[in-house]
Image 1 (cartoon, rainbow, N blue to C red):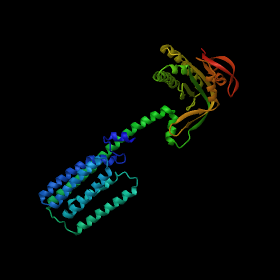
Image 2: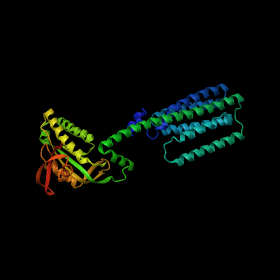
Image 3: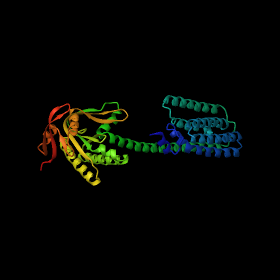
Image 4: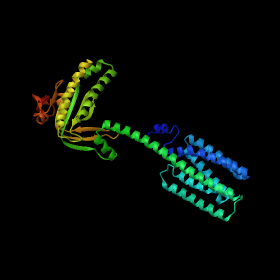
Amino acid sequence: MNNELFRELFENPRISREYFHVYLVGKYTIPVSVAGHLFLLFFFFALGIYPLAIVNIFSVAVWILAYFISQRGRQFAAMVIGFFEILLHAVLALYFLGWRSGFHIYIIAVISYIFLFPTRRLVWKIVFTSALCLLYIALNLYTGQFPPVFTLDPVFMTIFENYNGAILIFLVGYMSYYYSKSSSKVEKALDKELGRSDALLLNILPEQIAHRLRKSEGRVTIADRYSSVTVLFADIAGFTPFSAKNPPEKIVEILNEIFSMFDILCEMYGLEKIKTIGDSYMLAGGLPVECGDHCERTADMALDMIESMERLRADNGIPLCIRIGMSEGPVVAGVIGTKKFTYDLWGDTVNTASRMESHGEIGKVHCSESVYAALKDKYQFKKRGEIEVKGKGKVQTYFLEGRKF
């Protein structure tokens, strides 16, 4: 998830991704701490324990400072200040009131808070936690050997003990709730972002290929050999002079309408769009999921492309036609690129299909001998005769005219 979306998610432009749990927990627990210290402040004044009353004045000021520092995006500084206050307050409270006052249990809250700290080095958390455990033991031993400065009625000690225990339980529960809430919020946002990225990836790559790429995390070369695939190239005839006479918006609008129409046909026939190059459109049948009727599907789509283009030309009054070339045979398919992925095909079948298109005629589907051999029993063809094809010499080709009835 990018930083801008993250900050928008938690409604604070200064928030750091690393400290978002610290930020969110502190945002809601610090006010509780301030309220708790204010209560103790008045309680200590009422009992005449003025040193601890002064300590609580200091504590309230420290937690208010920590809150504003946290809101400015400096979660680490706020956390250090909070740790210092909790530990100092616990030590002084035990010194003045003794172990039974229960102030030592806030060390547990510090330990819980430590594990929100975003460092990846667990050893530092363990070291700091061990130090707090030693402090806990030391305070226990000290208060067992030395009497407290103030001796209070057992009723008040019971109040302190239960008050601190209840506050700790409340704070830990409060922290857990907002930690869980923030995690849930982030997970939903991540799921949403993942859905967007998956949709974008599926617009670039076939679903099966995208799944393999995600699974391998880009560490494995995606390459496959197919023994039988039908490749189709379509070129929009007359597009160059059309683009020279029309504004850019009109050109892109028409081209988008044509290619979107082809995309719909591709999906309808279960074929795979490979790419567009300028005003040319390339697709293939029989990959990445192999099927036995890919040549028939591609032939049907080719005929529909001719018909759709004629209808579009008549409806919009544009002087554009289409020229199609097809060939069938083996290919190698794979993903190339590291940042902008491309699923592409290579092999003689691809070259032949391209030659069929470039040597074809407007408004016709020009096919190789392999396509004719695969479809001659089900489709009508018109023999073109031998033509000279660059890189192949003289080859026999055919025009696809339709299905046999």
